[in-house]
Image 1 (cartoon, rainbow, N blue to C red):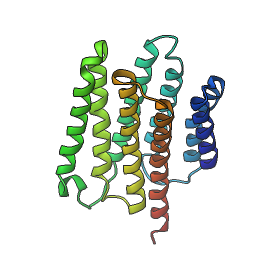
Image 2: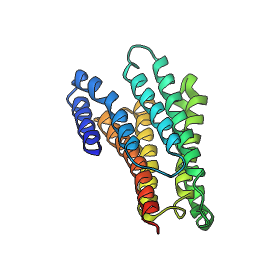
Image 3: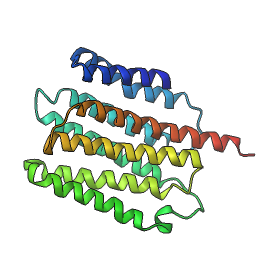
Length: 222
């Protein structure tokens, strides 16, 4: 299913790059179901799988809502709320991971400062252009920064491969949402949709793959 997911991602990106709306409308709603199937068929005894399922489901809803943003601006709000819910599920999943290992954020508190500074700087940049969306976008920026911090918090609490995948996924999500926000509210740029979708697909894939890699290590324990 991983190959199917990336094939769909390439088809979607091709549709965006060539302005083939039909291809985009076909491929995009199938992306998250491919990851859901990948997760479903992964044998797992780790807690939290249902949290990832829920997060992916709300991501799928967000994908669908944003497809119809051109018809009504309310669909952007619905999409924003859906992805906000996704991040909350991912935060809960990360924070439910238990380990005697110390949090990376305790060892390197400067990381917390850097992430919060990034979020504050982004909101400061966008704020004059947000209009009625000042509060929702500010709330969203806060939640996605918490999601990134949560992935840093567990970095030393899971195996190395899973840790790198979780952090890569969370970071890619921040990059994707930052690009989307800049393109929509601050300064539209060429091929924004392509870069947004590539980083978004990478984010979702890395988070799911992180779970699979963590499960694989647990299975290998004597």
